[in-house]
Length: 301
Ligand code: UTP
Image 1: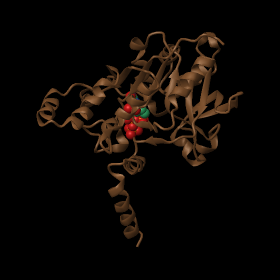
Image 2: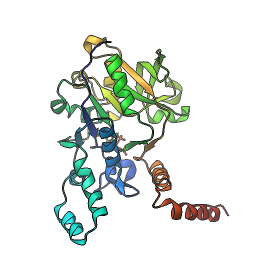
Image 3: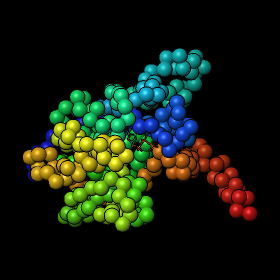
Image 4: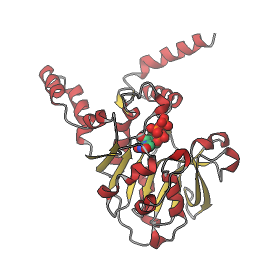
């Protein structure tokens, strides 16, 4: 087996405008919207850490200061909780600070996900890196990123996460043309299209917000013109990498993910996520679920 550089860094793009969630996201980043009592982005950083990535670079922009504050020490709050002897809440407040070594870079203008990833070039250097979208949560019971890192260690190049979606939804994602490998959950990606019309999609396998990317992507992104929506698309750069040989930064593989994923960037799925997370919480479910049942019974009348 070839010896590929290990993955040690995570890049979390969180500089988008979040227009699907306005007006809530006018002054608050969508990544900070709470899933019960924790901001979505904390789950994402926890996922990177549990895959062994302790160096996290957040790509932020205007109105995103609260993200930095969330992962930083809050002296006044900690002092107040300490004075009250409220150890439990004190620990909750300190938890995000001790998770990982956080770094920040700003994307001056939200010119697309590909451009956000390009902002990580200097920090990442010549190593492969993981990229986790700040509004996409993967259930911690269904580890995906660890598997993607293993696949990179076997095949080199880049690895995308693919999830099967109904054909009518494929236009909301990037879709992949795939070929089988000897492993059940791994495919070779031969082509990628960003948000294709349903009848032009190469398959029902959609790209979700987890990537392990070869550093060759930076050169490719620098040469990638704005694509769909006038934005520099990461999918377009990965498409180029998929056509390249191993010496140039290819190939691209996909891990077929059949676990639970929550997209917190749109209103409906956000609501569904909050309900599901609340239903799994020992401290809330005993009261929340009977209430929800009663609410639905009444609403059904
Ligand atoms: P989205 O398209 O879901 O985010 O990008 P958005 O643009 O904020 O959302 P809407 O469509 O306006 O509601 C996927 C991820 O890429 C980041 C976003 O923050 C999100 O995590 N992103 C997107 C950037 O960091 N920079 C960009 O220029 C665009």
